[in-house]
Length: 302
Length: 130
Image (cartoon, rainbow over all chains, first blue to last red; front, top):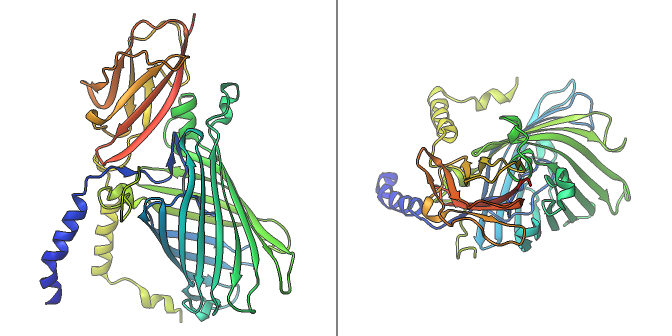
């Protein structure tokens, strides 16, 4: 009954949103460069993004035969020009070796990100943000923390399309990265310095900006990359220990979604003995609903 | 007992999910950005004589009225005839005429607004050999 009464105003609101004709900013595009969302590290763009689902399958490097299936979502909305808020969470299913499955939600994550500076000509961007893991919102069954964490974060991205023509084969390269320091709200947690970067070689960029070497799909839509995701504990037992993974892989770009696969190679023994695998899919909601998404809630980008 | 079976989808729900997914994945000409698909002269190519026009095929149909192709010489001066138009044989292609170009390297700068309202831009070079 209530739904039927609300149908008309909801429909009118949706129509108004769909008829909005302002020019949209394409996600992750700076100058001639498309920066794809990467798997192990975050990208520096404060734009509308909607990952539903983000599905990952991992064979955890830290435990024998510990399989993990994650199904998560991430929604980022540009509130003001260059400022976005995000919310994400993941449903985690663990199948430990010789034990029953355990599963549940991870702690809810919130992010705020602001694009501090960008230079389209040099395909460069710097952003700052704050990430928060809300303690107690996740499932105890999978051992989620009861305390919250806060992480001031620095993001950067740089494409190398401005290299001289004598180095043209290197122009498709791009580097993105993040640095953050995580602070827990309880002494049960530890401070950690987390850093990561992604080195990409964009075949679409090579084909459409540098030299048409005759690549055909799906090869011409692929971006080989290697990501480094590291964490150094700063206090408590384990202080000074760095763990992390080196993640070579490839992304396949489509106008509507991105498919990615990476191997997770442990950096050292402290990380674990096994190589893991992550497979991920992003759906570009701003491409599917361009008149609804791709715009700040208040104001417009210049 | 594995409790995962508790969240198994009922047939009707599964059908709705299937419809939703098909909507998500259904291709449509009015969705997605317009990126360069190919060009003539080819991106980064060397041609033995001046082309009469520069033609770019895009991955989606550009809005002609809000899209431009410029051809710049080595000094950054625009040398095309400023007549960017849609190719009459292919609505996904834009064309701009150029005069007889002397040997040198030229930069093609394109800016398009696709029908989904996303703005994209890019550039590439080609060389006219002596």
